[in-house]
Image 1 (cartoon, helix red, strand yellow):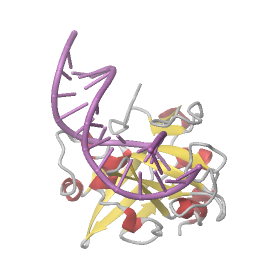
Image 2: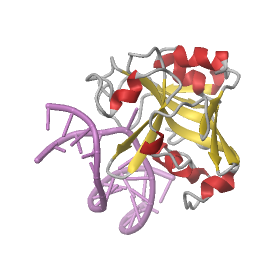
Image 3: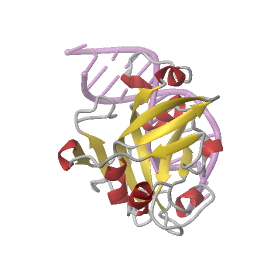
Length: 192
DNA sequence: CGGCAGATACGCT
DNA sequence: GCGTATCTGCCGT
């Protein structure tokens, strides 16, 4: 794996999450590929009561305790999948939730997976992007250096382009400023 | 465009 | 049993 990317992924999720903004996910579909840019992330760590890893390793959270650079996919609300990138050293339960992405190439491949009324609706939420990228539990634990989904680094964004806020949709530890998004990007899920 | 209810099933106590 | 790292549609401005 790219050494710069490996360095980002080795960080504590509070630092890895903003560093992953701008990085790309490449999703292969039958020899064709779609490329998306990560525009919104959240940090989760075992020290944090809102994290699936907080109460120790379980069948669901097992992937979070593995090595960095793997995909952690979970199912929630009876119908939705969300995907995370595992960070930090193996044995530590930490990951970065991908909350929104911007399609860069192969948008038509994503549109096959998800019907929408507007362009931003395709990928401007964690469950939406999983549907568009066709990510489900079968990809839990997938190595992101390999197809059919891989992660590519980007140059770090200037601090002026990164907005830091409270996380969304949680009740515990709701005051932590562990959500990060690219300023003025139209695909960010919720701007206040 | 903003707020709210309903859908729906799995992990964990 | 119960709560959930969400989305959608439907209602009101």
